[in-house]
Length: 244
Image 1 (cartoon, one colour):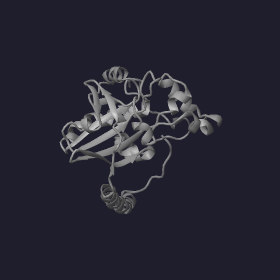
Image 2 (image 1 turned 135 degrees about the vertical axis):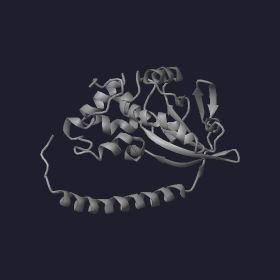
Image 3 (image 1 turned 180 degrees about the vertical axis):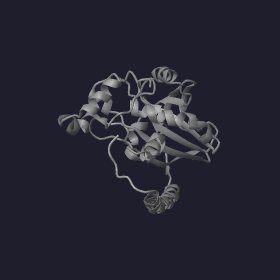
Image 4 (image 1 turned 90 degrees about the vertical axis):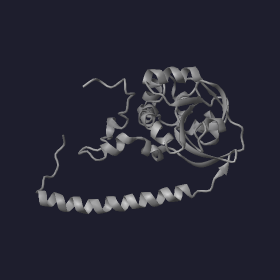
């Protein structure tokens, strides 16, 4: 544990009260952004995307499963992968137990990847998840949202110095660097109205942090995320951590 300044209870309470005011302002700002997010214009989905599921081929509208809203997590698990991305797997650990609560608010949650559905379901069993997982490998679903990249698009990145972290992640997924970075994570949201599907929101990168509950908890600990230096990518699949 690193050294840290020590103060009196009175000093702590004064500093905590000052911080609390800022936290409340952030919460109010977050509420405002949530409202603006809901007010975004909807875009009608014109393409007839098809997905392979454990129950057969389904359309995007079918994935709503009788509800009016659909939340899709674009899970990095490409055709050459032997296992899902460790970071996406940590997000799935948060999503899976919350699916029942999300359903109670008229929202269906599914994960979508481009690997064959049999491979996805085998990995789901290993991880102990139960959410619906579909294969979008035969469509442009991920590509159209900016969550899939071509080798040509990746050339500038691949011609530079590839970080050790990316190489390690590729190895953890059982593929090479190109195979790994062809996929991208993301979250997209949809509404079903009068038989038509509309895209209402999409995000990636740090926009995914609301689905990473552990970060919110770590942000309140003395060391925080502790992601400096070699600790930048500490996340593992939940069955790969050393038992303590």
